[in-house]
Image 1 (tube, rainbow, N blue to C red):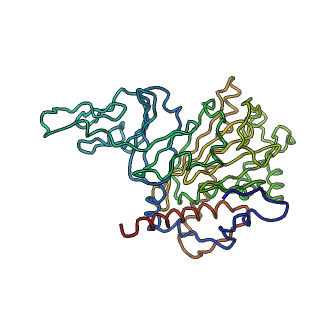
Image 2 (image 1 turned 30 degrees about the horizontal axis):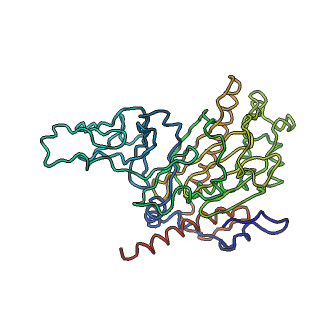
Image 3 (image 1 turned 135 degrees about the vertical axis):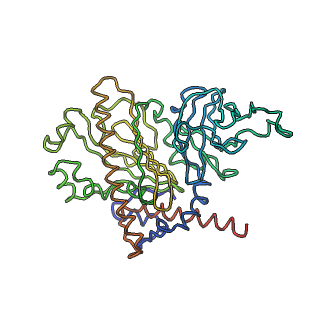
Length: 421
């Protein structure tokens, strides 16, 4: 569904007539039965990002990921050959969780030569093979070669690790991503190793929180207190309009122009921003990252603010024109709760001041995320009342239409394929 940029007159939504322009329903975000089908139709069929290769710096490095939406825990590991593989985190003996520390439901990471079950000491090598059974002679006709760890389909794109829980994925990872995403190849992800991570349990449907970052129409209002009063007032009065939206397959993009914070009048900036030479848009000193890939800044904004790529179903990669990026993940835990994860990536700081500049940007985004989460919990509580079922969307909310329509399409496709099974 790729389209040309918006003309001087017209609307983004009219570029995508299949999405319609009428009010929308949020029944898909409040219906427990829809959620149960969505888990199978979407999260057991789509490619899901679970981390980056920097989390597996050497052979034997591993981390676990708790994925309640598909009722499992997985181990992601770098094998002795250097490959990245994933397995269900379950021992083949009595079904105990294989890798965990003090709290079985908490994620963990580390380095090992093999995985040993805490219950009866069965051992598995990094390729998932069963290598040792305690008192093996006590078992009946045991063929260890048949009892390795249960694999999960796993692939890596530009250092991002994806898994797929279908018996056989319907598309390769690269085909699933499509040209809009693969045109980002060449971005220096591997040099962005200064990492800040935050995580929150949110009492709202995962799609509603994704919607919060699919438009910036709300920013001058919801985030007004994050900016000096004079700037916030002017921004609210002027409103906001992003210069570029794009939909391709199940994925979406919104781009914005930017501001050069250091060129703003002093009364428009916070004192801490002058001290740290950093702020909402990141550190003022832009690193030299070389030639950028063709997929970035499609609107050719100058100054360029950001590109937010929404990868279906629940992963966002947001590139900032100041030379850094962040990711968002939305992991459903029920029809009206999910885990939100935000991770900010910068080049390694060269000085203490650069480190502080990065921390200020990371903390600024954490505050924005908390404001959005708080608002979405209020939204969830009221749409569950079902006082209203039709909600109006403006032209800048075209990506919201697409996410909900795409999710419904995956559900309908799944129901059609499994009818009578």
